[in-house]
Length: 202
Image 1 (cartoon, rainbow, N blue to C red):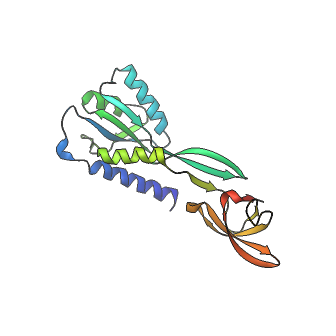
Image 2 (cartoon, rainbow, N blue to C red):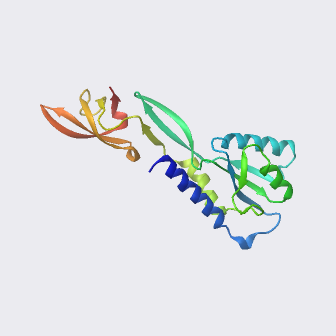
Image 3 (cartoon, rainbow, N blue to C red):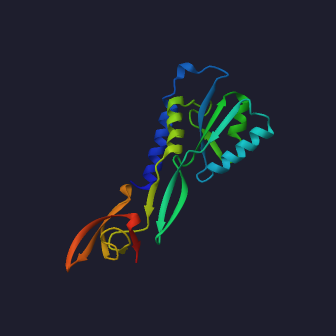
């Protein structure tokens, strides 16, 4: 699945979270989670801007939490490990708030915010259980390992029983952080399955 397809899927998931909210519990002055759409790449900026506005406009009694769900991704480039934070739902920020005209105005007019998820006049609160799952997912996400290797490239094996051998990559399994390579052992081409951490690009 491409990154673009994954982002579209994430958008649909978030739309469903909002749509599946229990509409019968739409009481006034109730603290609920809402999903805010932002310009892509502005999620953390929106969180920072909104938190400043909450403080400046004394809205902490109506707007409580601003979350940008993220997960840790480990990239291996040139044999070096690098960790980066990747957004689970690019283009969206979660806001826990009591919805009224004042709080709506503060959030909606924060720089970088384009709209609330829901109709133009009536933002739809998200289901509490779904939001908990999203936040839990961002705090317990197992690391996804990415590596800049592709089929046809040569790699040196740096650990395990085939250490110091050189192989040609025949298959890559990013979801498992593994690959398959053909290694010449005693003059015979032998397929070997390796983990990313066992190899180094040549």
